Length: 315
Image (tube, rainbow, N blue to C red):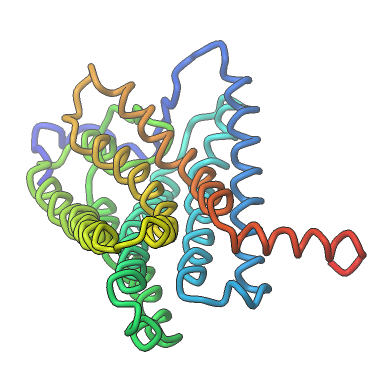
């Protein structure tokens, strides 16, 4: 509910993304983030192309990996292009509608990634804990339902938050102390009573972040216990190698995401929150496919086959 004392103020229709302030190294940051964006899109699209075209990668694990690479491409594209324009032109203004739209896609992608990582951990749990039932449980239809549920759940869940944000009143100031339109900075700028919005945010974060994290954690506890019961050292190494890449990705993503949102929103910690935000919004989409491809024999073999085809003029 809006504060009646602010009734005579002019409601703002655009925001200013304060981003990284007035650092003299902004041009260097532009070149750095531009190279990161190009590399992220190229590598993730390459992973998608390999998963689609290589028959050896037509398995549930790589199906989910292809979904994750698609997600990472869209995820980074909701933030970096607008940020690059601001760094290059120093035009940091963004309209209210554009800001809400950016948050909708960013929040939806973040929620979808949490759900998709939980699905991928469940896939690894079945592959290691119940290998005899794996083929029956993870058929094509089941994979489509799990991946589709992650995408639909993420977008539908964040629709509630975005609709609530669109109903808020903003009467100044209009400077967002971030490099993109995130939920917490937007709510702080609102002249409405933040209690209801904070309760809604907490509930949805609980559902789409904490619950998938706990499911992922439980899956890996079961996986590790199963691996430790394997009698041979070679068998334990082979089993662990099938899930180690995903475990690294989960640790990086959830580690930065949970720390960023668990810390109180104080002025002292705002720079740390920006650094953590850079990690899980910009660096993680680049690092994830590199971790999977560099640590995975099947992906490296698919890359070699694609390279050989290109060398003989068949690509």
